[in-house]
Length: 69
Image 1: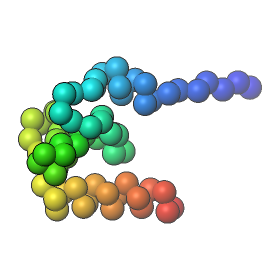
Image 2: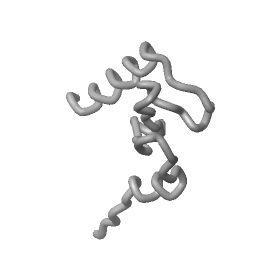
Image 3: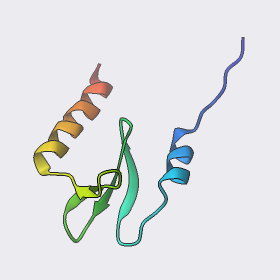
Image 4: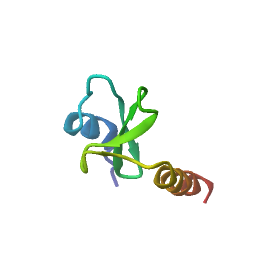
């Protein structure tokens, strides 16, 4: 029996590189977002829109529920 360590963070950072003026990328259970300090919101590069606070609350709830289970 063997195992293989897969570093998904490095794969994510290669596909979604750093962006000027934004923090990240951050992986929220497969959804990659950047944080914009000036706007105070997360930015989704796949849709080219900022994520609304209600949607971010839902993402955070699902993200943290995965750790509780």
